[in-house]
Image 1: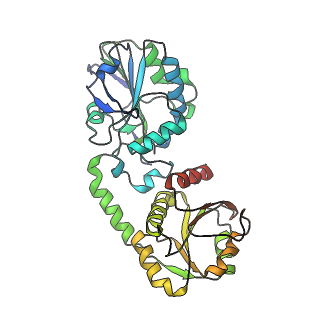
Image 2: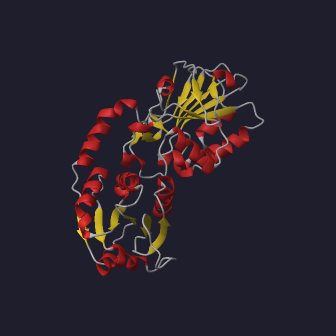
Image 3: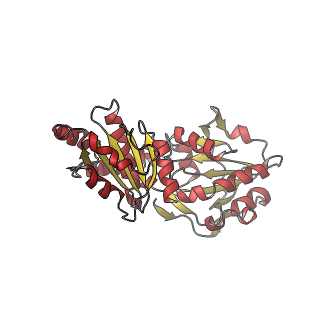
Length: 349
């Protein structure tokens, strides 16, 4: 996550009027300024799924929305990031990225009760507001003159609702000649223009060396289960699996996301030594430069000691081992990237 600071604590005499907007929401509707024309004070929050500071305010925003119900004031939230401009390692503190689909998953999982809009496609609304960081908050008065801009509040005390500047100005702020501005802290917004940086990052991944090591069952169990002080993910697969390429691409993406946090991701091919060249080619295309092993099928189940099933291991399977090398979970079947990422985040946290 990229950390940056926005405006300093101050006031400005410049009168800023709330920009016009028209954005899609998770409920399938298009929202504009007209949807909030009867609201006294209107708040706008720019929030990001993958930003860990944004995540700290999720419950606070849910509570503020509850308090806004039946009052003259209201707010809505905008997701501003271009989903394809987020580098893998920038999602290292999240189980989800910032696509419209992933916004919906986060909203359902966290039980969001506020209007959640998407501006990640052209980002024109985000630019009009002048937002550069998530989370950022704005409050506009009855005439839609800006009365507050900056942080939601102290992210280390996000549960103290009444102390949050956003809450105070949303419910009690009045229009004046000056606008209150505070300093924001969080992740820089990922603009569409980052295409060159993303391409460079992908080129660097393609230069990483892929190596496959042939092992027997005893060696494999020792190498995979020894405690090395890091969370370990192993994907067991076979070149004969129907979706082996798709699964390996997902595992590769997970590796790129969480390597920053010390997560070790490797693969175990279950098959014959004659398949080694083909296995290396597939792994190279998937850009899996982590620890890759090959083992004969009749020796593989020795790894499964300690799991619920001891003899019926099949491929594909995802194996999660704790930082102490203890089995955490075995997930059979094709890779569900969202479920696996959520389990990784739960273990890391």
